[in-house]
Length: 162
Length: 121
Image (cartoon, rainbow over all chains, first blue to last red; front, top):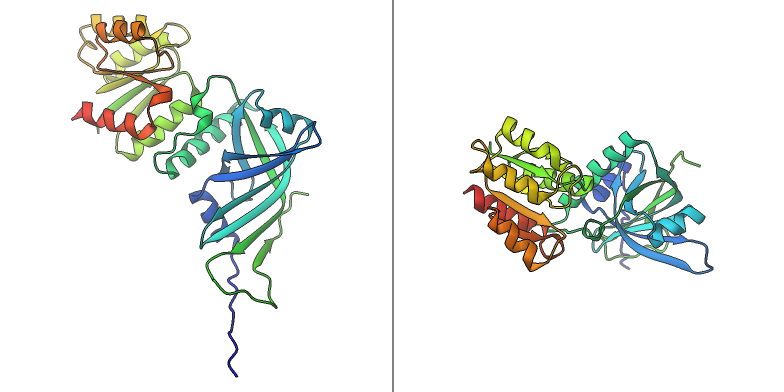
C-alpha cells in the first residue's frame, strides 16, 4: 500500500520577511466605532521584527477606525507561494523623523510593485502614519498542493510585542 | 549620471519619484517649496525638473517663469505634474515653456518616468 508522504514546508522568519518585502500590499481588517468590521487594502513596509508600517490620509475611515479601536488584523497572500496572517495594535507615528523614515520605506514598497500608483498618492490631504506591532504572526505554505492531516500547514512565529 | 530636480511638496510622492528615478540610474534632488526651486536649480544645474504647481512659498507658474527668464536655467526641460486640470492652466504653463503638462490623476509613475527618460534622450 502506498501512502503519500506530505512534507509541509516550514518557513523561517527571514523567508517570511523576504516574502512581505516583495509583496507589500496587505488586506487589513479593523473595527471602529460601529458594530461592523471594515476591511481595506493598504501598501505597507515591514521591519525586521514584523512591525508593519502604513500610511493613509487624515480622516479616512481607516484613520477614524484606528483612532477608536487600534486593534487590527492583516493578511498578505500570493497564490502558490505564501499566506501571512498577523494581528496586533496599531499606533500613530508622530515623531517627524520616524514619519519621514516610514514614508521613505513606503516609497521603496511602491517601487516593488510594477507600475503601482498607490491610491493614497492620488488624493490631496495630510498623511497620517501608523505602525502595527504584531502580537501574533503565522505563515501558511501555499507552494504544495498536498494537504496533511497530521501536520499543520502553518508556521507560527513568536513575536515579543504583547 | 543625469540629474532630475523634483519640486513636489507631497513628501511621500516626492520620495516615490526619488526611489523610482534612482532605480533608473538617475540622480535626484528633492525640493519641497516653490521658493527653493530657483536656488537649487542654479546650484545643481539639473538635466530636468519635475514641477508641481501648488507649492508653498511660490507657485509653479511663478517658478516656471523665473526658470525660463534665467540664463542658467532657461534651457532645462520642465515637466509640470499637477492636480490642476483646467485647460487654461495647461495652456498658461505650456506657454511659459513647460515641455509637458501632466495631471497626477491621469498618469502612472511609470509613465512619468518614461517621459523623463524620453526628455533626457
